[in-house]
Length: 198
Image 1 (cartoon, rainbow, N blue to C red):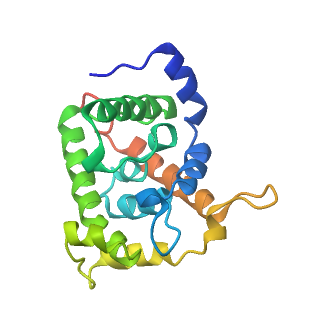
Image 2 (image 1 turned 180 degrees about the vertical axis):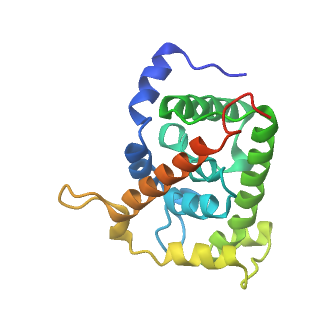
């Protein structure tokens, strides 16, 4: 298991804030920024979090938050070392945000759900972004599914709504922070949310 050094923690700590995470993910383009439309990792986070069951939605919304530190590397190209670093950064950020870390039993279930949703959404994202080489590998999306419609609604968001203008808060990052805070409130009120409870 990869452990962060004290210096690495000092570099990560300033990003352990929901507003910073939201702004960072809004600036990282999904699939390296390729595709017909601007589609940030923050949009992807809305989709994954939206399909996670309560009370685990916060883990879906924040599943890619380590990318504000380590960047977005596609799964087929990610090494074991990169995965280890990403997990260590993610876990440290959860800890700094004060979000309860689930028990092993719950964590396995949560990671399984996130993985399932993450895999399902890729073909819809790639198809709508016209990245047909990815569609060819991942398969055609189900055009009638709620997931496809959810991705489509995120792709329709105007580019300027993802970014701050004249020092004002950007609309979509602010909306994301609100969703995260609501999800954290639900998690904290759930009796079995604390680590160690089965």
